[in-house]
Length: 192
Image (cartoon, rainbow, N blue to C red; front, side):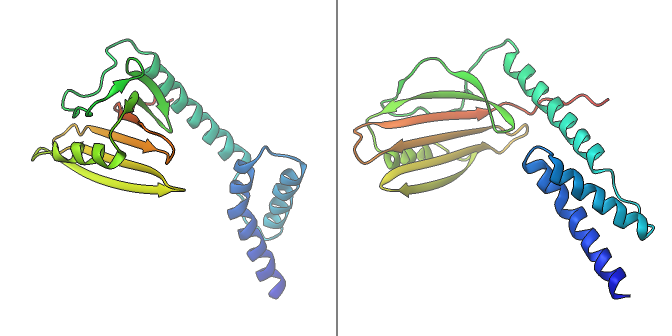
């Protein structure tokens, strides 16, 4: 009885942690051996083991579809501009035109530049413009005396739009680096 319990506990532990380990690095001989051991233990106990390799392949295919959809959205023609309601940044000098970039798992419109105002002053000016039609949240950070302020503005109506101000200044700098971004709607992923 104890042997069966130990075997079942071992099998469940391997089954639950193996997908995480396999995704963390490329499959190698040790992972292959662990899969085989778990399969053998499951067969001895007349248990059905999920096909981990198949699950990983499906996850990789889904990830590839999402990346393709994002790249398609990135390459699509059309205006590259922030929403019309985006507040102005005081004394803002742009680094160039707004661009589209893939950030994490979305395509964002991004505008970068600088301002002589501090991150706190820039954050205050954005918060003052929100009015009754926008929701907002603010994050003030200081790491090794580098000040960063994030202001998130959201429309209340559907479809919801979001604009983010990120203002950063290191202690030795006289200007604040500014990034304004707004995510585009998520692209549709084709189902097979």
